[in-house]
Length: 402
Image (cartoon, rainbow, N blue to C red; front, top):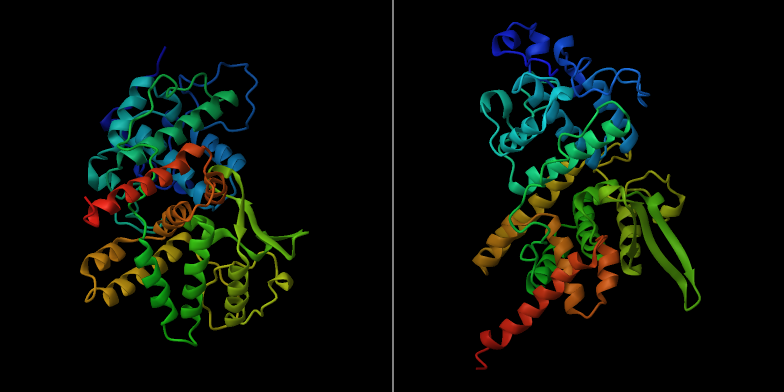
């Protein structure tokens, strides 16, 4: 028999630590809502494969075996599981292991408009230990709702496999649709002229400054490798590998790491970028021979005055990129206002799309671009081909040939 949901009055009567929307690591729940007696718990006597006795413990077990703690993808998984658990308790008055298919359908609608906002939405960047922390920064876009669905469905499927839950309440729900789902936004890339301007602009930054050296290397590195910003933040000198080739005694350099979706990636790093890396490391006071450095030394480092090696977070790297594009936009504004407006909107991901678009335009094979960008299906990479075909079709019209 399904358990009765907690009423609003009962929720309000809970002790303050349990009644507050709080981060997963600080969340305290009463036995009625912690999942010990959830109606969707596996039958008594079943061989549960994890030691968790409560829903928060089950989520911690799931996070612990799937991803390295603290990584960008791990934080995304924690965020979605945390939101789902908090919504179950504080909006639905149920334990996560009490939720039905109808509850989960309502949750997807909630993600698009988390109300009441005072309870669920807070300023971006609020530390998790603060009393005014909230699980949302605002409504989720259709694409983000879709991502949330994928993650929490995966969570519930794993808990079923672990014999913690009897069934997956998301299994009977269709995946939410997103406008333009699965499509790469090729328009969010730089034209050849804009790319050349960025190269010229970064080369003209004041010399002798550690931040200038970092930006000069970072621009070339991101364009040449097509790495996502999360990958830029994680790669280290230990990820670099050199392969000797019979036709080229200098060898070929690759970056080997675990990328998006926990898939193993191997990305080609051109020889000029390796030389640029050596110059950049020398500017950081680490010497040109990165082979002698500790393997965990980040390729993109923080600027520190005490000589220590510092790692950049994704948020810090994002701020560096946006600051650079804003500075470049200010310089371009007088000459090309429209181009400056595009630069002001740019992010690090634009360079990834720029690499894909420029590579196809120069005749690089589609499977080579696919491998470099780490796309699972070739159809994803083919978007750059369609964009190039469209550009070629437009040019005669724009040149007044007809």
